[in-house]
Image (cartoon, rainbow, N blue to C red; front, side, top):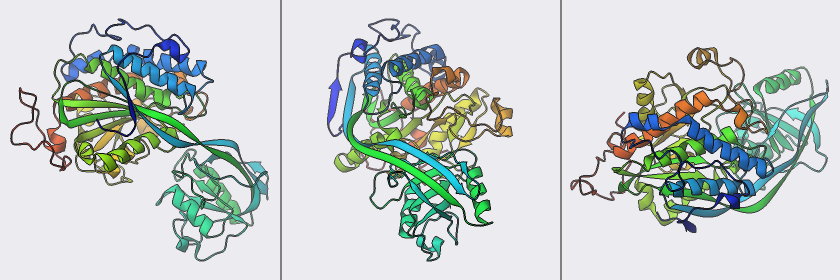
Length: 514
């Protein structure tokens, strides 16, 4: 695998370097659980994916967070220790690991208060957009103003030429990226912009990166947005917004490992972000995805022969704008586009143990949700691999939006098919979902999302077991056959592609076969 600035790690990194003694491995020469036979079909792989071992990995991540100031954010000692744990387990399972280093601007929030000054003083809970600039020291007090032509504020026409100088714009989520809303508010002269959600729950957003043309930007709930609009209908509403943020250049890395067997021209890629948010230990978000693919790698190492290479990725700095996965894909586009074409499909796992869970599959066929980005050909077949598995065991599932809000974004923007699994974050559970999965209607799927309470005590082991087994089974299925995704059949006994197939056509993603 060709990547910019990588470091191969062919020996285990001792856990003592991580600053703690993690869970003991079942066999120091084989890795955890390597005595369960050869999980060489999807059913055996699902059986081999024991939730107890996935939880062992989560306990290691929790211990790491506890030993490193309560978090595992990118660029911190907690992230380094998390990576060392992953590398150690992989090495004991027989893998060689590789790091890909990159730099990013770490965004930090020092102040984030929003309050109504008049007509009726009250505090409003808000979530500062990642990469928002600061207000002046002490904050800004100004009247609210909403776009007159459309609520989303996505272009100059939305403000109908109005001058918002000295005011704060109030706009709805939807239609365009948050960054565009900030730029358009700035163009209209606004001092800042408040964006309210278009569904239940707090709006957690990012501007995608620093830009001197942004204005201070924050998110609020749909309910608070509507309440402010109703007040504005009765007269002027004055608010006080204080946002203080910093940016610093930080180096971090992605971690990779791939199977020793399988055709190199047809790679199934499996990924999860390893970093947590700054606010807490990041155990559901995204220790769960990281632990599930780690155990999948351990079990897959026992399979004697795979038809396709499986490449595992633990992404860095996802919480700072999908930085690690974007860096990886951008590097391939620039330096090795043929390698990008060899990726048959990408599977993404971000939050698979939410307390108030759903069993969600990325909706590549848009049967329930319109996709934010057109799903590349082959994505529907990738989604179907998951839904077929769930249907085969009688497990209910629902579509979750193909939003590009996680590490699959860079892949789908560059034509690589993708799907994945998700148990929910800041959305609210519906009555229909309670009928399918139990839980509590009207509260968020993960009330601890991006908080210090995102710890191991709040992971739903039932959800984690369901998802871990699905991840293992589908990864093995595609490791043996991606023909429904890209038309490539398995290799012959020689391990080489069938003679009629081109090894590098440059068009690996040439159609769905759902």
